[in-house]
Length: 333
Ligand code: KG4
Image 1 (tube, rainbow, N blue to C red):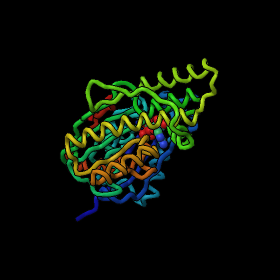
Image 2 (spheres, protein in one colour; image 1 turned 60 degrees about the horizontal axis):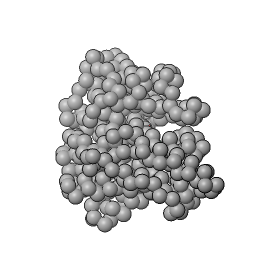
Image 3 (tube, protein in one colour; image 1 turned 60 degrees about the vertical axis):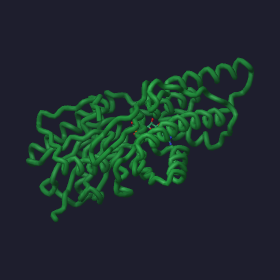
Image 4 (cartoon, helix red, strand yellow; image 1 turned 45 degrees about the vertical axis):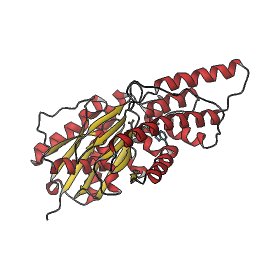
């Protein structure tokens, strides 16, 4: 069978990325240009700056990606691009680049959903089995997704307010840990112990999430300790926050598992790099004797290899876009 070469393009937030993947398995190249250093100065991603940086970066990233893969555009079979969700100006750059290439080289265009990319990043580790339960947790999303079969997505639960990564970043700001805060809290939590308690969050829908109240609870706890003249133990607070968040995530995963009995459980998104979440997911898999796949650390953050991979699946399912394709910042799965 002839090889299938898919070019993936990703620009939904602050990473400009291109990748070439062969037959939905083999990464020939994956280039990611991160803007994190620039946004760190502002304590978060500045959409206007991010869009401009994507414009500057897209051509060099694409050129490097093709060079590293050792292929020319003529050899590419289709172009997969993230068209949502994400920051609208950022998405525009990737979509425009993909459309231009598709038009100039007369190649099929395959629009894909960013979260589908995070889910399918796990296929780099192991073949996916269906029904599949996916927990996708990042700076912009917290979703529990069921795939009854390949490339079919059903949202079982989602956040009612902040995304998990957003909660990590906000609490990190409260603790003066800088941006992005996920890694810093994760590290600090490992030095902490059980000492504080934060309230358990209840949601109307049992598989939904809620994280905004936790940030307020952290602020209140900090104020309470200050008022009482107690020195705040930041490591213990990070420990408590991390355990409260991961307990909520695992509670929903367990409930969804009991309801749908998936053949496999996968994790995806930036927060999939979290040490406690990875540990709890592994323990859960061992206990329930269900295969759990954790994405390799380099595929937790945004990248285009996962877009090329899910693009390959979408291409095989006949998904096509035309030159009227536009970005959709709140695209549903
Ligand atoms: O998927 P991603 O790269 O992009 C966005 O959706 O923005 O996720 C980034 C998010 C940030 O909020 C960051 O703080 C969080 O993932 N994050 C973590 C960890 N590493 C990154 N959160 C908790 N623990 C981590 N180890």
